[in-house]
Image 1: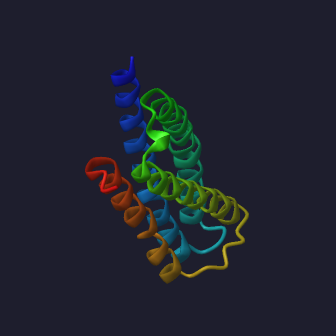
Image 2: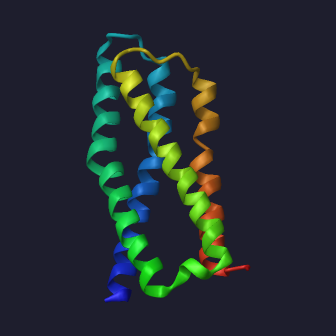
Image 3: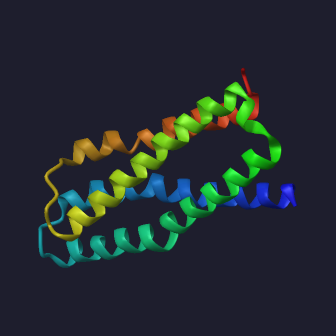
Length: 140
């Protein structure tokens, strides 16, 4: 059963990261759309659907499967796991920020620039690189 849960975890992580990498790109383009325009309304739908249909279910499955793997594999005693767990907590916090920003765009209350979202777009990538290195290499 452990290997099946691990496969489910990896699939969920891939879906979560796909959404986490794409959503801030939508924010970048949404910044250029005039409030109330058809383009802005389309971005609102895209952002909301990406969050509700892909990102939120994926984070839920990622966490549930991951917690099972930690428990069943006794990884909670490993140093690399503690570092990975911290990065996953930060990634989950970024997810929370993205959720808030989807709501702000949905209410036409975005106050951040396109440049801001271009920088934010790199955060999930950097966190993902650290997480993958910790899981594969297990440096400590």
